[in-house]
Image (cartoon, rainbow, N blue to C red; front, side, top):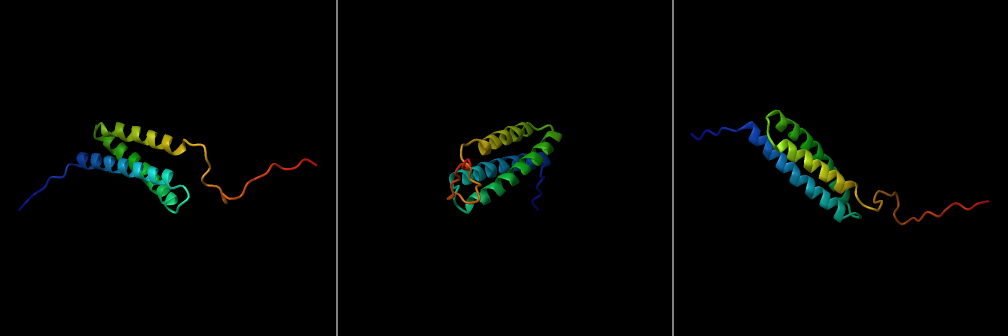
Length: 104
């Protein structure tokens, strides 16, 4: 019989790597397809990845693992990547242009 010993610290470190990859993929989907239905799915995946990175990183920190630092650094880079930019993608109707109100 094959007995496998699963190390909790190794499992948490694997979760950090998994959420890092998912976060980068979600960021790419969100930023590269802004006018498609995948943009919303990318945002949801991005938020889930950030929460996962936060929880897995905090639990890695409890086990004195250096992956807690990697999780924090990745969260910082992902948040910068999501907030940087010059356009508003979440407008109610992107085809509508807003004119300045006329002075009476």
